[in-house]
Image 1 (cartoon, helix red, strand yellow):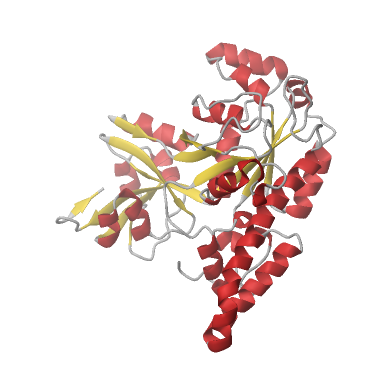
Image 2 (image 1 turned 30 degrees about the vertical axis):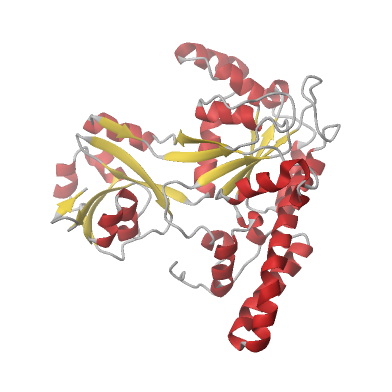
Length: 393
């Protein structure tokens, strides 16, 4: 991963930890059992993951790719009328509920925490309404307690992992001075976790980030908090737990997004179409939150879209913010990165304003970009390469 430009102090870890280029970054839905995770997953993905009223119904994580709502993609498809349309997508993973003691293996905790380690970001769902038909593993609704349980279990697992990784470094550092910075890093990391802090909330220098990237710590992952309200509370946008949740997130995960949602209400909206859906939402003065949730996950992973267009196909390609042109080309095909020559780039806004590629070129807004160019959100690109002879995408 390239070292970021410095402005004063080093860039914070939450920017650097997501340094890999991939169109398959994953968001995992995490929470206590029976908070609505699988029901939300079903809605987001149109899949039929089990959603029964008992803990640990979901044991193996369910994966699905969720199309990203993007008006730009829709407009491009209308313009080019392609034979094939491929929108950007967010991979979502439904992970079984955690319980207190999960880091020690309680409630199949080790397997569940392992599933979380393989996602890149977290949807942390908390339920804030009682329901006599839906059991609560802790006996009663207490959003702050529930959020503390999840946060603590992730942190304790990271602490256990960090201590195990530190043990051999101690011996090596005694004999090899070059290992001492790594030992100092582990000492700081363990101190941070023991103080009840999450890795993503602190600043780390570039060398420390290199160590962190190897660890894939649970508390380094960006979090979006989903507050599952009753239908009544969502419509009136009121619940006694909302203010405490906002305060808790501000203190424990500053900068993380909070999205109220009513899964039971979304289940009513989901089957409706056209005028029936519009009337249902207008009567209650609400809108579905599903698109916002997908977008929030996409944004939390620092993903942007570039597009390739033509009569054969219009496709959105998710990449990390800050990706250069050759690495972006590599998401299309690895040979395109290896054999990259240049990218021909026009901006979506220019194309929409001017109406055609010909007009964009005539206006001097069709640019040739080289290997150092950082792809921007909404770029429409044609990749020039010499993989198998001169070619393009």
